[in-house]
Length: 320
Image 1 (cartoon, rainbow, N blue to C red):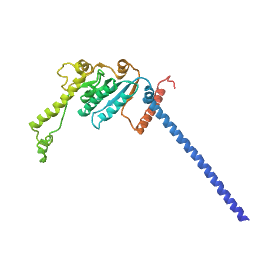
Image 2 (cartoon, rainbow, N blue to C red):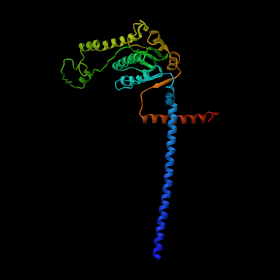
Image 3 (cartoon, rainbow, N blue to C red):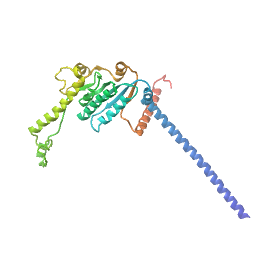
């Protein structure tokens, strides 16, 4: 009988311990869930602030009424560069085909780059303008030189700031000659080719007159002529007769206007409201991954909170 009572007592104690363990575990789970929800809520709020600050929500709403589609291209022009024909024309296609886009503004900021990529974007813009019967206006930011101006020449009109750098209508190809350097080091160059001129740009071999002449006449000058013809085709009588126009020189906005390289001094907002006649602009730029968008939105949200906190603490009379 005593043994049975002891057994029952032990079982009861174990049951009580189990219940207490379950109770504590449930409590811990509740707190864990609570903090997870707090974190998600905070992260979502910060992301919302960042998205709202970046104007993504506004862009969605703006597309329901007439707007100017603004494509932004910034960086060097290369096959795998910040500006390349595939990505640029994809953005421009979206801008042109948007149902309520009245016209397209192309914001350019580039020192130039590949003549091939520039030519493809130039031709693609001419095709899109004809296909959708919409005008395209270029607005130059800091610089639009060389291949960038090649692209800009496809526009119906080009605008820039007074301090924008414009021009550099020319072609350049460069390399190094290291023949004397390897001679001083006692290095002998051994080059094996099939084709008499296959090694003509080898920096460790002596340069000959035929190579220089061939590259100058058949590469540099012909590429330059293609560039000039493209600019003349679209700019036409707008261009001045200044002999330096196609020399590779660059100018600031006001002189570029005098030379006929641009059509006016204005920013994107002025072009939208005054030239196109709409108050809304929708930005089209290279898409980012979901993770990049969330990270950027969160960063902007945190920066916004910090900025508001700093200003509220340092400026008397600020209303929270």
